[in-house]
Length: 180
Length: 115
Image 1: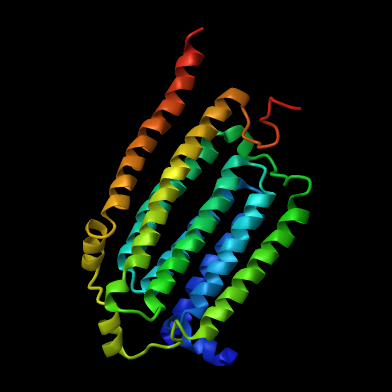
Image 2: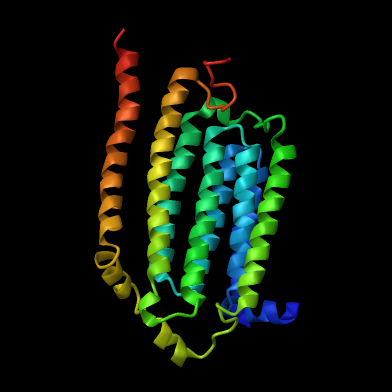
């Protein structure tokens, strides 16, 4: 009972944060609302018994991406206070598209639940432990360095390239600005 | 399944996670459509990627399958988070670069090659 209440509270946090992020006029408020939404999803990961994912979500998304976003909003301070008007046809185009997306995904979700491929309630811990042997994150490490080794290394290469690219993008401008 | 049973089951079923992910994805689409600002646009993309990762984790937890199949969905979600972080780092560096040039990050205003 308490578990269900906590679960729906986390769902509400995720959805309400995202909704506020969409409608907020001030970009800084939108960024903080996005942070609440990401936190709600992290709690959902905990309910999914994906502790590592929850930790990574908090560390990388909230601690990294969101701080970077807030920084980007703040360095462009003169546009921050400006009222953010949507593009002319933004809402006319966006609302039907979003509703269509929601409809399609809801139909898919209902079909999934109806198909029985994802059992509705699995409350028996014994069968749970058998089908998903996942003590903490140990099993994930085996998977990462086993069948997913090549994508794992590619992500490492990508992150290195991104690091260099981000620095190069920012530094080049500075050099050109200082040259004349 | 009745609504009451759905609400009481809470975290022990896949339906709730799928619903949250669907709403998050739709809101991300809406954010991308209605934001003129490059940083706001990026926030919408982050929302959509987050919804996809949540779906992967939920299906990993609930889908019937052998023990060998467990965990792969979580790995996928990890990769999504890593790619989202990389994407946002490069995109924000580009936004910074654009801002230095135009003193503005309005997506409509920062165009020079007008037909």
